[in-house]
Image (cartoon, rainbow, N blue to C red; front, side, top):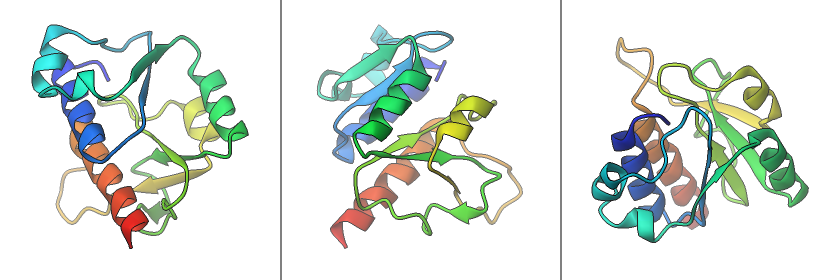
Length: 142
């Protein structure tokens, strides 16, 4: 995520959904700036946020800990409502405009899309993040 407003909104949704932590790449991504703190409405101080150098390595470490990787991808065959997100998962979101990089997509255990009825092809990354997070929360509570 490169836009500080988007990162702030993602952190706010992550905190509201009860996420354990947020991981983001260090390269070509925004860090915790004053704008991020303001937009997150305090969530940036309550949700652990880690910027890492090697995303691929972290994804492998999550898999080794039996955490399933669910990637958000508009071209996925199944929707987020068809993927079991009731267990230990990490939701993998792509960059604004670009989506998931090829290697990141390939490392995901599942790819899921948000079903859309309108003409737009994609949603803002912070909106899509909120939808994925709260579907996971809904599945865990049911």
